[in-house]
Length: 285
Ligand SMILES: Nc1ncnc2c1ncn2[C@@H]1O[C@H](COP(=O)(O)OP(=O)(O)OP(=O)(O)O)[C@@H](O)[C@H]1O
Ligand SMILES: [Mg+2]
Image (cartoon, rainbow, N blue to C red; front, side, top):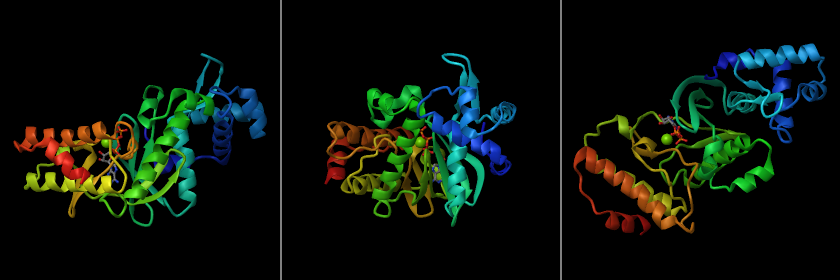
């Protein structure tokens, strides 16, 4: 289920209050009992049940009896709270259609000071490693690891964009709240969906951006044809939550994998042959 500007606009203030209350209580509960929500929100039981019901219809709240009877926020509920905050600032004045949906994120088009991309990070139970935090660390921080992991993922991506822009061609970071980041909208297409007229030139431009990022202390760590966009001005590298620094213990291997992924793609698609050892050496300067 996706969020629309309409769903957010139509939220009743009592629904918003329930979402905020649930979010707060999820710091100490994975499933929050009805009675606690009711007390903290300051509503009667019937009012609380009614609002929880409409929030469940909207997919923002879940109810379960296993492992405990109680309510929990969903990714959609968490996204909604973040979007509400961002839209109270100037960062986001309108939310548009879905433009991408990956394993660990949902990306919308939006309007802020210009056209923006709104990326909601959804990092689930299986993928803690992708934000490079230990399970123990996350378990200590919260009863609800996915909320923490998704926020950490958004924070990491935002940090990378701030380090990289404008030295490297990446989207300009505009704002962040909770698990959601707002960035410049790239008017282009991902590499996997284009057939460039000058593939060798595009390959060189990608490797140049990888080298610039490296010199700014950032290794992408998930580079592929899906995370390179092409616009009128050239290549733009996107999707940075898993970046590492050049002093990471496996930095060498991670950088080599990034470069090899790209070289393999250009070899398979366009028959371009390049020496990966040489290209990696060029990237690290
Ligand atoms: N700044 C942007 N401007 C325009 N489109 C974007 C932008 N960022 C992302 N997109 C679109 O959204 C899609 C998904 O974005 P991204 O690659 O960042 O996340 P993802 O691949 O879903 O994440 P994950 O790797 O966790 O599955 C991209 O393929 C692209 O089409
Ligand atoms: Mg991607």
